[in-house]
Length: 457
Ligand code: ATP
Ligand code: MG
Image 1 (cartoon, rainbow, N blue to C red):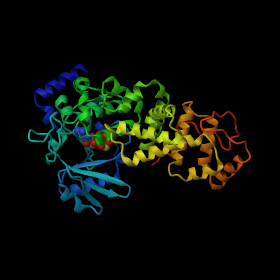
Image 2 (spheres, rainbow, N blue to C red):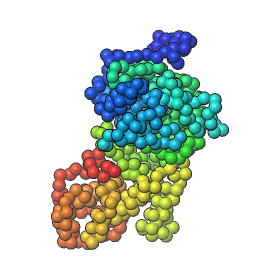
Image 3 (tube, rainbow, N blue to C red):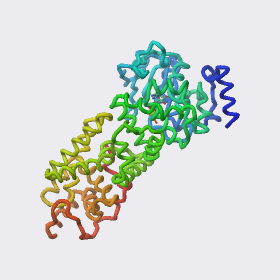
Image 4 (cartoon, rainbow, N blue to C red):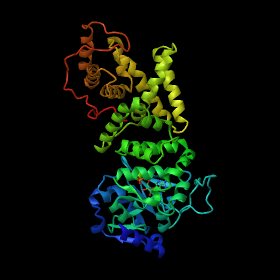
């Protein structure tokens, strides 16, 4: 480790860290070409055939080297968007601030961007140094220098199977070190989201943030307040769905990065009452992500905010407001409060509301209204949410299982189950505890983390 540090220091002295490009061969980086998206390879080949430079870049290269499955594949090239687009049958230029090309192959989109110049004096920044525009094309070396961490500045050439490494990223990756390229303070000031990214990558790689990149986090945490709410939402979602959500949140707390960033996180991490439920929700999300399944943002945020909604609902009821309208009012006020800092998109918050509003309707099984519930688009998600509540001990587990069985049954199975209810004694009012047990129609699969459907968007 010490010799490593000395080597780096010497390297910096002689300018190797900024100029010393290394070509790393297959036997050293270990990427198996068969794990690389054939569409990404195709994009590189077409561009190279036209005489351009083209590499697979960023998270995909990082993940391939450590043996994780990349989420998506991005390509970097010295061709401009106008030069890239006509080379592919289905390609479109997107983005206003910095244009890039989406090359579309069925379900897969290969994001192809032109080498970009790093932040320079002339770039527009806000009063805190946050970059507002960076839209100049640059050289390959400049493109590497403007990336955030050394491990994210690796370029894989599928033709030669070499990795181009300007900042000793492969070495850092081997030691699982997240190291900022350039001066960490300047780079965090340019874009405070990088602080959250540092935490996410350290957790995801089961590694650590190097000392110089770690040191400024506490004191610079408040800069996150200047980040636009929609950007924060995107980053938060990435953090919560990286497969290690609770670890990430704990790391954020350790580094003082959660405070003020989102009232939501203060609640999640500091309010004892809601913890079991949230831990379950995050745990379950992690399992799904690691099993390669999709995760629904609405479901996740519905779970994270439920405790607060419930508390507010209880307060309103104590003030004499009644049932569902009070719940709606509670939901609105919690969402308003949260979205000040973190813009939960409308399409997500609409789903969250549906999931929440259906919860009191699970208390009572009224044959006539059950069909109407089933027809609601978020019925599956709401039933799944109910399983979480049951697993956290907040809802009768036998009744929760009945609803899950109902959601899983085909139409005639559903009709049978609902018909059976007519032969049971009438059930109590909303919120009444349930003690009666029923024979289960299916194997008990309602264990959190095992159900498949509603998490899928
Ligand atoms: P993942 O997709 O797994 O979250 P990623 O590294 O691919 O990780 P993206 O947000 O997809 O992250 O970004 C792709 C690449 O763009 C990164 O690897 C990095 O090189 C660069 N990048 C992304 N965000 C920033 C940033 N805020 N500052 C500098 N470079 C960035
Ligand atoms: Mg990515």
